Length: 366
Image (cartoon, rainbow, N blue to C red):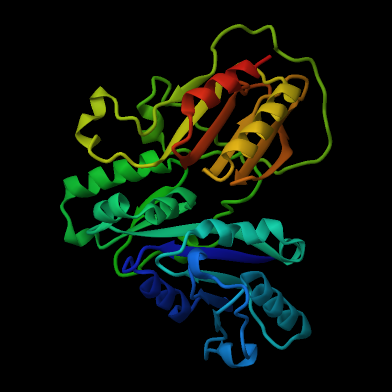
């Protein structure tokens, strides 16, 4: 499987600077770069690449660059075929979207097209945020909020142009939109390669990292999982703990600004996130029905979501995650005797009905 990184960010956020650095660094990797010229709004599927050969440029360090003027799935298919035939040699793919592009449809390509899903593994979406202009861009352009909401990692650029307080406020704002993504301040595209590749943001595993500062605003700010389990496919049934009556499902606060949070209240972002947690097990059938309904109704408004679940009658952790309506789930490691069994879920989306989803999840508890 060829790993793919999607690089996104608004106009002027520094994507090209970062990309040049990736391509010029001596890391020994052969990288195919796809520059996606059109945003989601103006891709015309009738426009196909006139002459694919002329658009693929082989660079001196073994990297390849090509420009898409049409369908991403077809270009990826062409690259994979050329790699298989030995015509091109590369280890991974970086897709640079235009500054106006919503990364959602690009990410969905890797789940909707079976041939692509068999050959490519979507590793992560990295979003660059221009510290100097971020607040204005987030206020004015929903696509910038979407770029933040989809991210597995956020790189804040041009931080030298703002003061510490403005940077702190921006970090807080980004955190409420997406507590899943680690936020890293980078200057002049100087990010460590290890912070760009092999992040495994789309892997189905029982590692659910949510920024602890986000959780700290909730009373139970210490809960975030550190397990490194691999998914298995066998079912294991043991006795359940449905009779435990302590702790009902709880929600960490999200973007609805609370009293301790008043100095951020002037940004009413459409994209917000919330966390659901419970020590009680879920009833598997009820939860499946409820999540199916939520995805059907709110799928387009759900950007990213992930959970590590404690299910009644299952001795393994159940993990799920998704983009829009595309959800995958699997069984992960067994609950260890020392572990406290609980469920954690994070939802990132556009004007999601938090109370409705929380009440519905509570109703699915055994």
